[in-house]
Length: 493
Ligand SMILES: Cc1ncc(COP(=O)(O)O)c(C=O)c1O
Image (cartoon, rainbow, N blue to C red; front, side):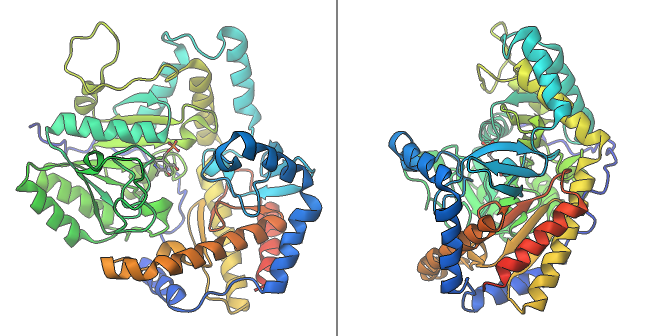
């Protein structure tokens, strides 16, 4: 097989989107303390008041949610849509705010799950999209100027990317990365980190959310599809080495796939040297290193997490911010030598790993991506959003301390984690522990839903009640307003 490429090209300097990496030793001690003590949910009479908000103020959303149930399974399609007690229907989105169909306004910390780093509906992107729509409509199936411009900008910005294929979503891009790594190395085994999310392809719905859970969510996926997927616990370099050694006796590892901030967008943050050590292990064992930068791409700075950590992966999976909230949010990039195996077109006789997509690289989304990234760069959106994240986390820490709560708030730039129930932090280190925490996980998940509902009732939309994405639109005034609202929610505990 070909050797993985180890000579690093010069790294592009990135603005400091992450002011400081959290002290992970202290954080993990606090996580441990959080999950070892009884839950601290909302007081029951306070919860009744929270639910009253939905009854009194959200009748339009409720009606639409009921209607949705007739035509859509469970009435909900987006896995990040908060559905307790029912999903809100949003009518307007602009900058840092959302307005629902009943006219209630919210601070938007979901940011569509991460892509809208510029804030919602940024005019600098929308105007360009409208121009292209008038010129050639959304799609032609042929080459377009902005397809090349977007690809060039991505290659110039992300240190580990010489060439890029634009795809439909992060899921598609992660799927392509696995296929390409196997095609390039001639090996089968893929090691991912337990708890990480890489989309919903057959081979990667494995060990999701909680480490050690393997095929727990793999309903409908044949065993064969995950037979060569393995998980290794977060931050455990020795366990990873053992896996690589074991696989060497059975044909070798094609790739190690990581979320470079840690599983679930840094819910369990990496120790600062983890990625560098994983890089070394990959080189030692001839495996490709894949960074899934679907969340960190451009949000951690124009160079992504690889620019921040100064660690070069062989392949990079992109999504979300790549197209600034427009569709076709997926791409796979990497070293030219590896990427050559993704050559497209009907005329090619090259050996290739097949990927496709009728609407991939369409002009509408390429122009959106190009101007979104240009604006992110010009306005230092990652840096600004990161500073908003710092301000929010500092304020949350002050409230948590003042109210003597066991909750943990931390941020990796514009990705802010607010752990109140600790459901994603439960210790699932071995099968016995996993069995023991199953019921507890249910109760803690419910508490997280209640907290999420309370945030919503106080005008704050979060990601599933435990994660917050900040954006360029989050001025100091927006963050201070949010902190007052969080304080009112924590008063209910
Ligand atoms: C790290 C990571 N990888 C992959 C994906 C899948 O991307 P998509 O939802 O665009 O398929 C996600 C989505 O949240 C993600 O967070």
